[in-house]
Amino acid sequence: MAGTACAVLQLNAGAAPAHSDSNMRLAPLTSPPDVAPQLMPVQLQIKGQDHALTLDTRTTLLETLREHLALAGTKKGCDHGQCGACTVLIDGRRANACLCLAVVLDDHEITTIEVLTNGIELHPMQRAFLQHDGFQCGYCTPGQICSAVGMIGEARAGMPSHVTLNLVAPTAHLSDDEFRERMSGYMCRCSAYAGTGNG
Image (cartoon, rainbow, N blue to C red):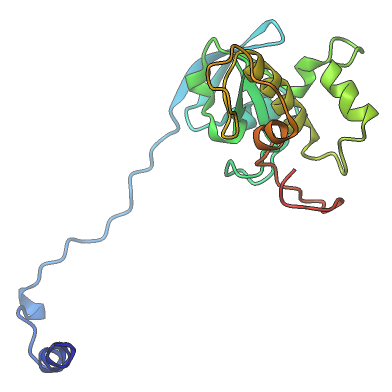
C-alpha cells in the first residue's frame, strides 16, 4: 500500500500542472484599510470611587490600571494570563487583569493591591505576608495577595476546588492541600526559593 502511494506521488511529481500560469488570475495585493481606534466610555469602580474614562476598546484592565489610573501595584508579568502577577479582584472574584478588556467592566468593582490598604493600615492578608515572609523579590506579591483574599472569599462561599472532598458543605475547609490547589498557578521569575515555577 505504502509502495503504491509512493509510486503515485513520483508519477504526479513530473506531471504538468492542471492550470497553466497564463490562466491563473490572482487578486492584486492590497494593504488593509487604516482603521482608526474605536473609543468607548467606561466607568470603573475602584476603592469606592467611580473613574470615568474614554478608552480604546482594545485596552486591557492591566493597561488601564497602570497607564491611565497610575495604579502600578498591579504588575505586568507574562501578559498572557500564565504567571498570575496581574491578579486583581473583579466584584470579589479573582481575574488576570491582562486578559480582561476594560470596556466590558463598566460599573464593576475592581480591587487592586492599593485598594486593600485602608489608609496606612494594611489588610490582614498583607500583614500576614509580611509577618510570615511570604514574598521574595516581591514582583508577584500584589497578585498573590489579591488572589489569597479572593481565595478566602471563595472558600467562605463554599466554592469547591479540584481537591475539595465535600462538595455540598456551606464553606470549604482550607487544608494544606486546598491552599496549594487554590493558590497554584503563579510562576516565580526571581527564582529566590526552592520549587520555583509554582508559588
